[in-house]
Image (cartoon, rainbow, N blue to C red; front, side, top):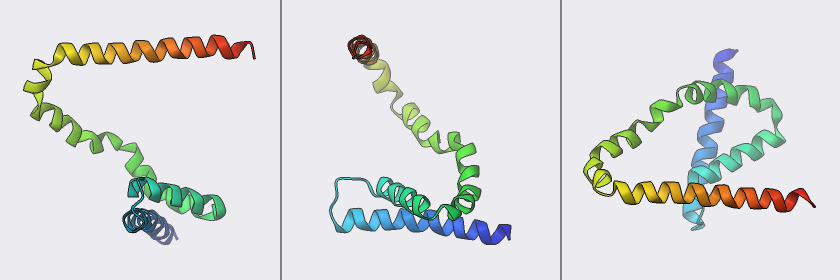
Length: 116
């Protein structure tokens, strides 16, 4: 029974992924195919809630080990380390500046909306 559920869940995830990729490519949508596939999967799970358990059986191991999926990003940082160090001041100012501006905007919006 567990094997059948895993097969159904795997097919659902892959089918929604490939449907999203196909629709995004064929309709020339500005939305990435994997994101469209995720929306399709969400819609299917909304209308057919019985598939949730099967999909969870397949997706949960990937979600538990998601840090492995970020290995290419870490390797990219090591590849461009010279560029990062040469532009470190600009990167620091950009990160701190955007964080400060978003924090200030959040504070002002919170104060404004509190009285509504």
